[in-house]
Picture 1 (cartoon, rainbow, N blue to C red):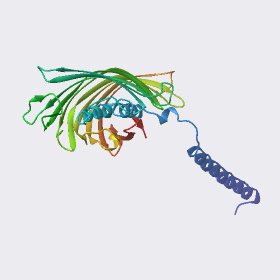
Picture 2: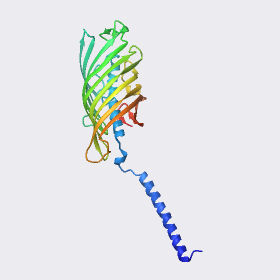
Picture 3: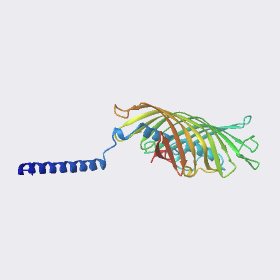
Picture 4: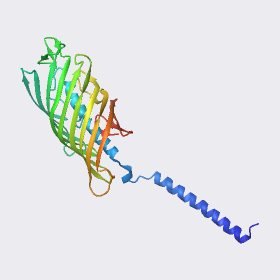
Length: 293
């Protein structure tokens, strides 16, 4: 039987243990529900790569979907004409080579305000060729009632810059080669390759880092509507595979450990989203804005 003194000591130790347990539980709950900015461990090279890739395939920032919109626009009655939308500033120069049957177009487009939250300056040089049902070149999409069945579309070079809420980009090089089939039907199918090199600066509450990257993509059966690019990001669907290489620098010594990364990527496009898979981790991008959701 415990003496009174030992009983009091045991009771005190029991109460101290209960108090400590309650304190740790409260501290844990408080930490989980805090609104503190993200720490270093809460950002990663994969998440930043996904941010960059979402930008690469976006529409409004001049990514892949924007160029697919230009391709689809070739099947409209006006065909890559200057936009009537006041938010666009378009300049276009077009020349035709009657020997090869190839058009060359230099296009400039500006979206948003330079000092605004979202802005893009886009300059592209394209070549394209309309082919009839026999695979022979024709000058226009429709010639004597014959609608082109196929369009060969190339991105020769690109210049530009854009910014979103977290990312700003300086484009270095751009090229692409695509074949659009079924261009005489309501739904066009595109296959091809797309290469982009750029410096993406990503800024969050504590850290700024730059991904100097090269992205190479293979476009597999990307489908989109003939004759219109209105609400295009909601209408296209398909699969994209590729690789992402980046050299990463931080503004300061903090950040994640990786400084050079090479990633295999898989992207599913559909319902206005880019579902990005990097090393088994999945991320979701908004196809219209080119931003992460």
